[in-house]
Image (cartoon, rainbow, N blue to C red; front, side, top):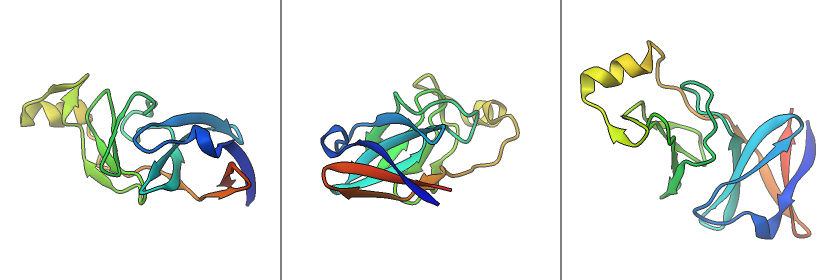
Length: 122
């Protein structure tokens, strides 16, 4: 594994997503409780970017289908609950999930040193 600089420390803010390409992977960074967190910037439902997702309470919500993920662990908290922000009835949630089972985000080890944020890529 190698550490690659992904951002300057002041670019990564609590409650906001900073995106970068690190080692050819789309990565999103944010802070949770002041600590830098990183994950592959793809929703596991259909692979769409989480860039415009809502970040709140240590979780990110996919702006397209409402799936919600714990940023620190990657754990899935909610699976396909809406379409472009509009809540879906339960029967439609299953249809929009298209048979895909709930899955978590791929988190990446992140660290800070000398005013820079580094991501470990394997």
